[in-house]
Image 1 (cartoon, rainbow, N blue to C red):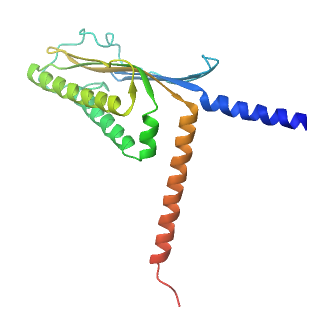
Image 2 (tube, rainbow, N blue to C red):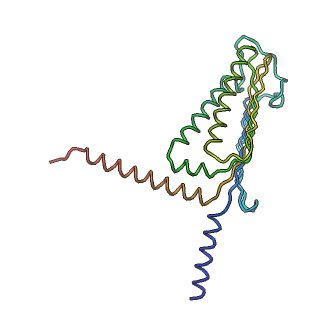
Length: 223
């Protein structure tokens, strides 16, 4: 009986420990000249538990370091980008990122409650953009600033932002260049994530059962 009690107490303490565990996630993303690098690290228990995901860099032609103006001088004529990220593609990518965030936020109030429990401790975002045309570059830089500001506003509104976002957009008026680098870190309690996951699964399962029930009701009865 004593052993059973000790085992039960141990299980309860383990559940409490897991529930209260603070999880830290670091994300680094770089997209420049056709090279993509995504680095995600999950840490818990002061680094004793660590899991890292890396997407290998896609090798492309040799180019100068990201966010430096040592690119080739631009031309108004259409050029082969050789698989490199263009300014227009960069802007489109940022717009899609904003759309994804809006969709995530609009999924369900349960997810909103979980987002409110996430603490953002780092948010650095640098972008270099240039088309070779000063007027077009200026307009694109303004559009990138607008998208970045909108995304930062969503993060600030729906999460606990402990640091001021570091946002930079560097226009290069005489060079064709497009690159972006994002580094962020956020933390949350494991219990909050588990609770939100269970509630969302239960909600979706209920919705699925409701849809099946309604579809059965509208089916014609066979005599």
